[in-house]
Length: 367
Image 1 (cartoon, helix red, strand yellow):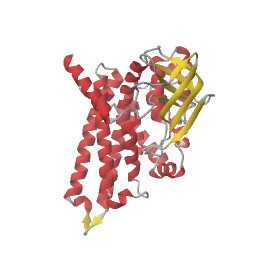
Image 2 (tube, rainbow, N blue to C red):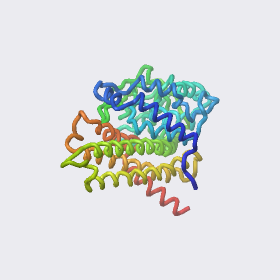
Image 3 (spheres, rainbow, N blue to C red):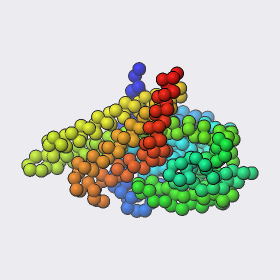
Image 4 (cartoon, rainbow, N blue to C red):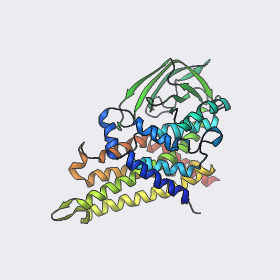
């Protein structure tokens, strides 16, 4: 089976890479890092103008109706640039939640705005360190109460999809600009992606999907998001490898490039092997995502674990290749290290996805 992307998808990749090279160079990432912003609003607006937010939204709701292969390409290029935008929260999860379980009225209200970049969504499921057990958040008579932590991209978002507690859990759709919502910034390892502690105190909200099916829906949403996050991680891992190689070719020690030394060669070779393995697993994930295959949970967990490991390894070895200078604030190595650590925890830790992978493998062997 050939998992390679189509010519159209590869043309989109060229377009996306050129766009981000022009509009999101390392200097733009550093401006957000140094400037205390939680995201790059100008870049986010330009991405919306490119139509990326609308990629998989059906045409009937103002979207482009493209396949998930195209969205995977976009995710990879955003990861390569370490783009400081709320794209993943809004497109990978909030939009997917509306597509999956939103009512006709909810889709009509939000999907056209999401497609046009006029609205941004986010996803609030954890209440402490990514845990979903014993959630205290509750939706009663149209009022939402509880605390979610950490919630990504709240400053940029207009609404949130919130997982509430109770038997089976439920999902709620809440307007973050309304009363009864208070957000307090939380400092994460990657300063270019804002996170917050959000307190809901009788905030107006409405049910999203059937009551008691929240946890089951979230499991499906996270499997789908895991593939897209894995492509971001592969893009970032490749960028870290290229950054390390470029530095090693230009840095001389004892009259020769450090890239000629065996220790550096081994570093670069190991990065390449891990990146290639992760990319292979991501192709499998992209196919399963686009076809909604029965083995999506297995493909998603495989891609997610490989993506986490490859990006962390590449970003770490990139710093090591740069030597003592790699640890300084002035060098750009930190961008991918920070992003690799953030993405590794964004929708559950490596340990959680390794457990999901084992469970999926057991189920596939039984079947």
